[in-house]
Amino acid sequence: MDRILGLDYGRRRLGISISDPLGLTAQPFTTWIVEQRSSLEERLRLFILQNNITRVVIGFPLTLKGEIGRMAREIQAFAEKLRELSGIDVILWDERLTSSQAKRFLHAGERKSRRKKENIDQIAAVLILQNYLDYLNRPASINSEKNI
Image (tube, rainbow, N blue to C red):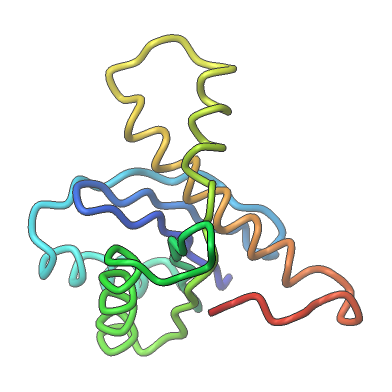
């Protein structure tokens, strides 16, 4: 079955989530350590092919004023490269405050962990993807264009 991939893009780590086959829920998958940008793009392309991914949703870090900053421009370039390599739709999704939500979520339910940063990236990827899935699954009369 087809799935949607959720990404929390960072310069050092990439949080990854994946939808269930029905496209209703986002599940944490893993966090990849980013060593080289070019190998990350190829690794993602292969992952997309092997897992029947039909769409990728990448968190888009607009400023609180809704402006595009340096990291957002970097993500735009990454998304375009991923579109070219994979041939599938790549959506930039407003991710404002998802990392802080993920930190609060983990702080409330987890003891100290060496892997806490990786967990935060996974949870942020889940929040990004789940927000997108919730948007898709609302009645059509409620939806308005939120994707960038």
